[in-house]
Length: 428
Image (cartoon, rainbow, N blue to C red; front, side, top):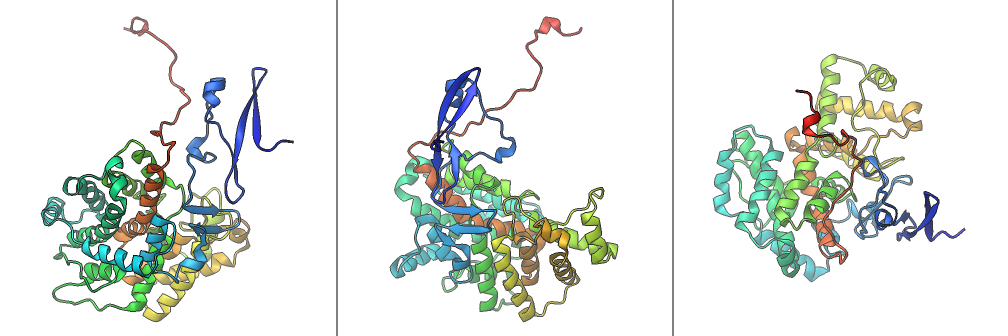
């Protein structure tokens, strides 16, 4: 049997389509000419079985619990490299050397300030506005202050534009938070690292200076690294689709942030905290909660357990669990919600029902716990996700930009509306 092609038999005629093979052996039927040859299109609800691009950035094997950035296992990266180095890896394909790291860090520092006129934009948002909505709007507005970020002009200066955005997004995110709580904004400092600068802009105030704790900085680095990319998820696919129309970089990333803001994507860790709060308020025991979760007739579901892609333990969850245990022990946080989360995790992992169905705690479960312990408010959880995911979005956007076969994305549909009718046939 020849495995380098697949045959489709339709109306007695055989049509042959090539089978393409990826680096790790995954195979796909190339149906680019299907409609032209047969008049047919494929139907794949939510694109669960459709590869929309070639990509050399991130590899995932959900059945074996594998996640790699540019070929490197996540276990070799998380906790051993900084977020800045990981961002460089995603953008350039290799970790930076000494000189490259120094130049990249210097540019991140230089670009950390946003145009001063943009500060006035924050006055237009009502106090209490969600930081995610503020961030999306402000990123989109960047194009008016920093033009020439369309696909064609960026081919000459993609590195500077990408670095500027990665640097400024943390400033805008911190400013959005300060706006939401009515505190004065804190400007970035030239003598702090990427993550330390963000924490200082978030938590420093004129009446209570923020003390930099390297352990906390390390935890934040780890969290951002674990979220830096995750292949063709909803927001990354959004970035590729929007970008395929030659939309400027900032508007494209703004769309990615909007896609990330939903509860089924970036908002999942916030949903975990909502679930823990409901458990606390109902005074339910963890055993009772687990019984409800196993009852198919009960609409209750455990948030932060299981994963759409991983059919085994989420490799990021293994790493973040260790960091979570270490961080909570060091900080000695006393929080009823965290105590509920710890008991829920322990009992679920010991329950054969959840283990047999691979319903392990995922990265969203642990990231919400750590962010809460760090003092990050819940309405900033999704913003933190966006901060980490930005290098991955830009890397995919840049990869699409350089694809010689690039075309504007245009899915087909199966029409299920009314057949042909005419106005004079409508009831009067």
